[in-house]
Length: 132
Image 1 (cartoon, helix red, strand yellow):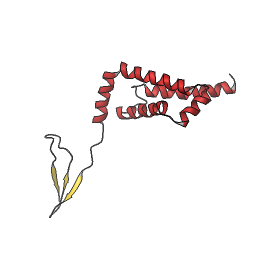
Image 2 (cartoon, helix red, strand yellow):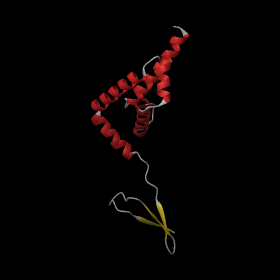
Image 3 (cartoon, one colour):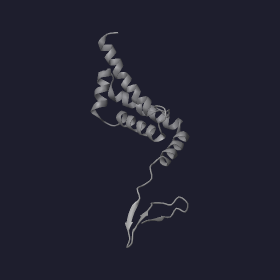
Image 4 (cartoon, helix red, strand yellow):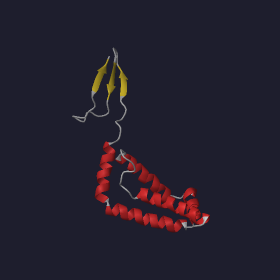
C-alpha cells in the first residue's frame, strides 16, 4: 500500500467512525452513561449532516464526494432511527432521568434563610427547608 493509499484509508476510517458513532447505542467505554452516548451520537450526526468545512476536507482527503457521503449518512441514520425507535425512546427516558437536579434557590427571611427546591419528590410541590 502506498503512502497516499494509507492516508486515504485513514480519512475513510474517520468518516466510518463518525457513521458508527451516529448510529450506535453500544457503550463507548466501560461505565459510560446514556447521556454520554446521546451526546456522542448528536455530535457525530451534526458533523455528518450539517455543512462544515472539516467534513468537506476529510471527504476530499479520503477521495470521496462529500455530498454522496452526506446522503449515505442521512439514509443510514434514518434507517437506524426507524429500526431502533422503541429502544431510542427508552434511552431518551433514561437520559432525562440522568440529568442533574436543578439548582436550589436561597430565600432570605427575617431571622434566617430558607432553600426552595424546584420540586418535591413526593407531592410535586415546592418544599421549603429552614437553614438557620
